[in-house]
Length: 270
Image (cartoon, rainbow, N blue to C red; front, side):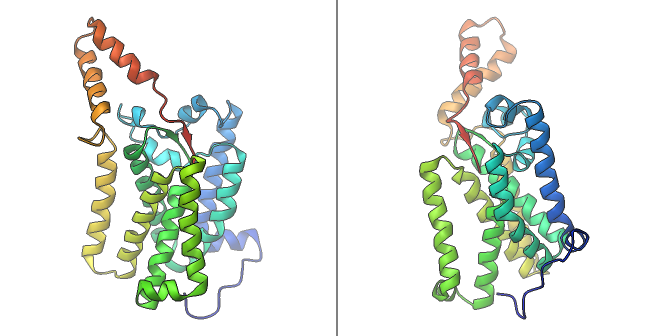
């Protein structure tokens, strides 16, 4: 929904790097981490994924909070990397040219963190991939359309935008049956909506504060089992804490082994 004609595509690699440096850097980071992981194992295997930064609530709750960030750069098998690269790169470069590399990078990384955090909160699975961040960019696009057209009804009445909204909804439906990490997709999209709102109405401070509070709340909520949501996990975690103090308690050790042997619901590709 930008005014004027679209920018011509870059004619060379140098021009592409100059016009979209953050997007290029993200792709390079994804490919580099994938190559390193594959050189020392298989990214289709849980052990390799966890070794190279995938997110899993058991390890995040053990203090490895940094996995919320590293998971967005790691992919599960070559097709996962190729799909996210092919689907996401053009969207990344277009948005980066529109809002600038600094704001784009903040939006992308924030959405990735939000997606990882909600993945930890929402389900017990080993997860990796850039799709949480990419769904943040989809959410940002939806918000831009909303502000440009004046209402969500106007967005829906545009046939091209209606198609994009329907395809996004369909992807969530497919993901529910195909094992995709819809929790990460949802977390990224919500942050993307909020983050683009803060960018579009700047220098109004309230949207920025609310967006920051959303991200901090999600990341903080992912650090430990939450009341009611993780009732069973909280009982196991109490056993873990007790094991640190009572090493000779056989029952406590048994509960700890149950927690550590859990590998979640499976491997999810955000």
